[in-house]
Length: 217
Image (cartoon, helix red, strand yellow):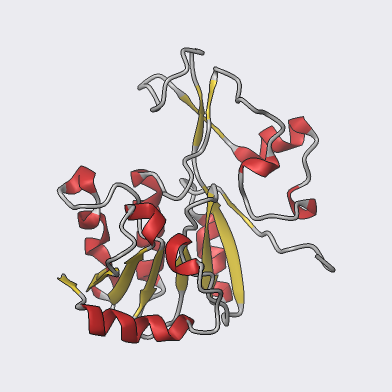
């Protein structure tokens, strides 16, 4: 694993030159792959104590049945998975909302396992991990690392790294897939081959949906 020096990092950032400049702070929504899916960040039903973290006895609450109960159609939403999909402000005290801008450790591990099966070098695939300014509250440094796919969790503070949130973007050096976790969203977009999408949907620990911006919006 190595942190890319400023010049090296800026060369990598040239790939995103056509995207809005503000995405350097939130994460880049790069395009160009045959398909994409959204990994929905976890939420939990709790005992109603207003906990900020999921207690050991919390039950995972899946998005799809909850949205159906609320009468919310994901495909009709103008925005990607976000707080705007839910009618609550504030949220009920017995529901711990999904985390904005970061996957939970279990979902990160499951995602990395799937990505490894669709990478030329498997878990040893060399990747670039980028952390946007809002995820680090550091707007003067380009936080970018090159590392094997299997070592991505080591970047996180829970594993001895320096970052609280998972990477804003992650991609292999051959650009065969792309991961985007925007700081303001409750889901992580994964782009790549149709085969990768099928593997994501088949992973039981991940809640995965297809969402596209409605036509004309």
